[in-house]
Image 1 (cartoon, rainbow over the protein chains, first blue to last red):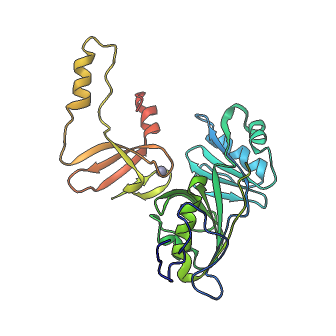
Image 2 (tube, chains in turn blue, cyan):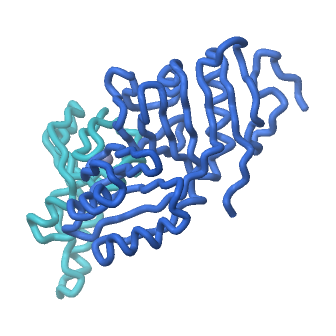
Length: 207
Length: 94
Ligand SMILES: [Zn+2]
């Protein structure tokens, strides 16, 4: 292993491995906490032509939230519906193992449904410094006065495609393609070290 | 350069891929002079200075094709609409 600066929070961690759980960077109360231990069931819903409004309404009724055909996140205790494009919705659930089947039964011929649970890693980011961290890689304005709870965006952060939304005042959620988990975690650690970053991961894929 | 995506809002051009001229119509491949028409369509493109209509694909966003009005001299963008909207209006596949 080449010599690394002692200031490098990623010193000694192989590029192709997800950095291990632990504390990185500045000591004290962490400015950012990153967790991937929640592994929701995920499915993508794509409304067929002319059915976007109907699909949004059906999803809203079924999950007890207000869903519209726009880039927003409708959040309840167990489910989240996120708009990612016209007539396109990502549905996350912590309690529906057969989310795909549930959605097929709900939407019938109005939409195409595909199971995506293992496609993405869900990063939960909490803490006051999350916007400052994300600003280092984002192309869009994530200032907490502009990007409000319930707002969602599909964009790139650190050159990696993400769908992200603000869950509450100090909580953000980001979906990243699973093969980018190591790279994206490295970005979070490197960019969050100055604020102190607590990382909690280590769950294997659902397989 | 920032493109006002009708779904995503204003986004950096780096999120998009460009296809070019949105004012052309793909020739009918069954036409008698299809070879000549396709040569013209594919190779003999205009290079207008000023107002232009272009196809842009929001690859790192909503994954939709947009028809963008851009001034080629200033890069000023005066608007963008979803290609699916113009397709429905004209009946022409994008
Ligand atoms: Zn878009």
